[in-house]
Image (cartoon, rainbow, N blue to C red; front, side, top):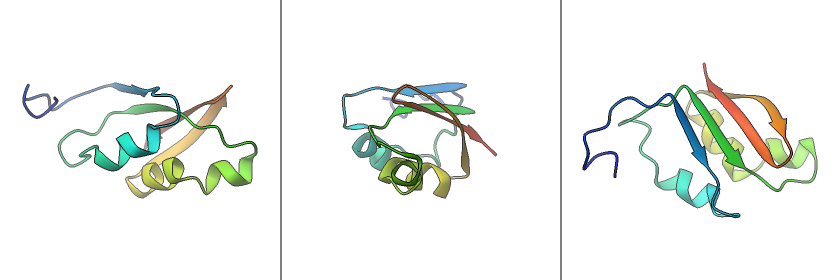
Length: 79
């Protein structure tokens, strides 16, 4: 959708697709668009599991840092 609409700038990307967030992130082209903030839902039960989740590893690999967690939502900022 972003490519077909020629969207190059996004301030906030909020993904909430009931457990499919990691799948969406695997397909997201960060070379095309690098949101400043990304909010994802991650059902990791503790900090250790969260830090090794597919979602966290994908985002940290793209230069994002986890800044906080609110309920099941994890908020990442672009470094």
